[in-house]
Amino acid sequence: MKFAIVTTLLASASAFAPTASVVSQSAMRSTVEEVETAPAFPTINGWTADPNAFCAGLPGSLAPMGNFDPLGFSTDTSIEEIKRYREAEVTHGRVAMLATLGYLVGESFHPLFGGQISGPANTHLAQVEHVAPQFFFGLALLIGMSETTRALVGWVPPVTAMSTNADKGERGAFGALLRDGYYPGDIGFDPLGLKPTDPKEFAEMQTKELQNGRLAMLAAAGMCVQEQINHETIFGTIKGFF
Image 1 (cartoon, rainbow, N blue to C red):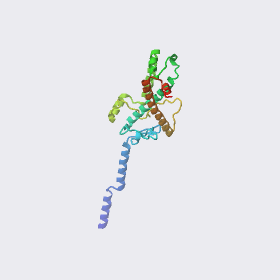
Image 2 (tube, rainbow, N blue to C red):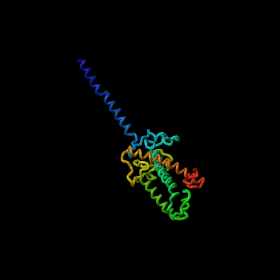
Image 3 (tube, rainbow, N blue to C red):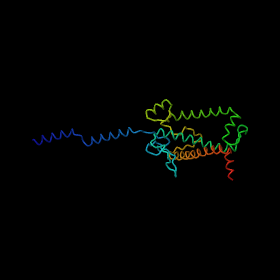
Image 4 (tube, rainbow, N blue to C red):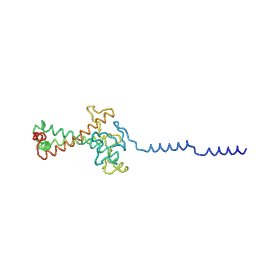
């Protein structure tokens, strides 16, 4: 009889003791909560920002240089700032590719403005200002429209951006913040339909564009400096070596 009473009491007490399954479920809930609090980034053009990857996982690295960043611009850098760096790189690369082409073609073939523009490309704008000063109004209007469109598509309004950057502790952004769902450089302008829909193909095309843009930035800078030194056209300088 006493044994039965003791057994009953032990069974009742064990009902109030935490079981392994309860502890396990509690640990699982804690783990799930930790995962849910981790920052989530949208997938854009097949790219999902990875804070642990080089340059947040953006394309652009190519052998033999690989992950080339000797000055550490992408080290300990937020996703928002890396996106701003890539936006600037892509934009300047595109301008440089046009500038490089403009140097070579403009110095050899110049039917505009009655054929009065000639000589080194560094002097062309000054000549245009003398021949057709009204051209600069149209040029400024075109640049303003292009930049406004790019700002509306990819950038958060300045007041909101400054508030958001302050909350995140971002410094040096000067009110600049790209939208979360915006891929750096992709403003939606693709009249020829060249943008791939496959993420892998898009990454390859983006890498090609970046590599050509980087080369063009060096080339345009070199052409500008060369013409400032000898005041000759690019092809005129090349012919001087033969």
